Length: 201
Image (tube, rainbow, N blue to C red; front, side, top):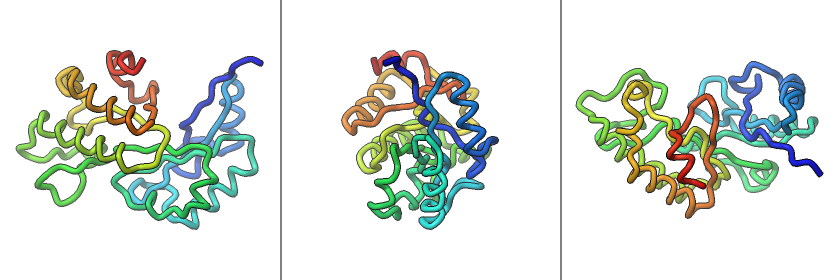
């Protein structure tokens, strides 16, 4: 039997993807990869699947295709906690995302895609908060994969990555994920530092 890779994280037009399920399946198979769908499931992502009833309909749709049935859940959003066990069991895999982290002194989580960065918040202080959120995510969220593990807010993405993701921070992140049995995603869209990936091996 020939090993065939599985794409665990692809979005469709059911959230913010460009292809419907049938077109995605065809595109992925054309690359020699097994397809799965993992659309956004969150109250806090525009166009996402945003209710328990919508999750049920989403899974009903996926049942009609030869695909893995995943979902990308935002840790800071409550929807993943509302999914009943019978519905959660219909997924083949669960993906968690740190699309926002909790920072002391802010009245709401700091979103990764906001162009506003809190005045006076230093990058090191942000990274301390980020690691604390990642460790809490690993302790409490029942997922198989952490998407884009080294994603940071837009305003920090021009900052030298080695100053944000220092070796001690990488070690903390990977230890938390390892203890929880959570894999992390390696993708071309949000590329983790090479050292971060090598450390996992």
